[in-house]
Length: 404
Ligand code: PMP
Image (cartoon, rainbow, N blue to C red; front, top):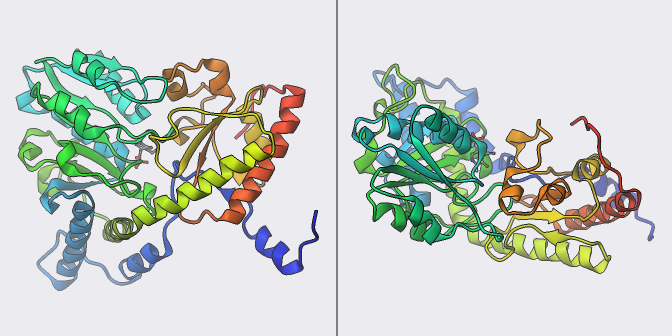
């Protein structure tokens, strides 16, 4: 190996460990931080106290952010309700829809087995309290079959919820086509768009309700939004009762700095999204090519073509994923799947839904590329994985009970 200069060595050292878990969270963009700082350091009024100028300027900042968020998906500001994140938005929109007066006669929900846990848990709760919850599966590519979805919907269906982009395999669903199946039977179409918005163009006309998360698009964590078409506003029961903020749909004082950061992140994404996706696609192709060149045995889980640019989910035959993560953890930060289920060592429900079997699910890792990913990092990551896979495949090591 070539000797590296001291400067090169130190610049490499600053890169370690390389962050490749962008589906779990995206780091705050520095430009977003700059827009937030005045609202963190200065005297900021309560945006709901508009009897004085501090409150008025806080309120203006929040409303400007709401416009930026709405603009990113082609919605109007009054269709955006701030929440603490996508989990809360999913809860508000789905549980709120089922509790709303007008869904009283209707009792069924249709969703998929590959959804995020925050949808699956809500569906389980609705099922336990008497609603009919119907699950559709994904095919081996990770796609929902529109006809299968249509077959699960009938006149009793209040709501259909299908995620826009899967958080583990990055596969993109055809929202407009799926929404048509729901709408033609008089059901509302909700999408958990946490992994989609800011990565691919998403259009509010393609669904009735959507959940958005700021920390998946380089904004601050702890803030997100529920989009609901204007005509549905009055038909959703709030989860949080109190001062009646957000038009009564979500009581509680809004965190001004977080709203401002979320709005700024949406504005940046709106300008840069396509260019960034193109850059990430090139990096991802490079990464795959390096692994192939080095003779690493691997397969991609889910469709590579119908996937966001910043995701890979890779099966390394004979290599225990937990052991692999531990082995590379000083060099690369990556995960086996959903951060929300990282505590459990259960095989990924998404990979199982693909029909891949437990063993393959336990030998697969998720790799997420993002805004700060460089070609040098791709090389470091591919190097580390090549070595670790070779070492682990040889010993056939199975992690008994790895500490995270
Ligand atoms: N849905 C999906 C698809 C996600 O990836 C996540 C984050 N893991 C969530 C919902 C939850 O988002 P938040 O952290 O904003 O509550």
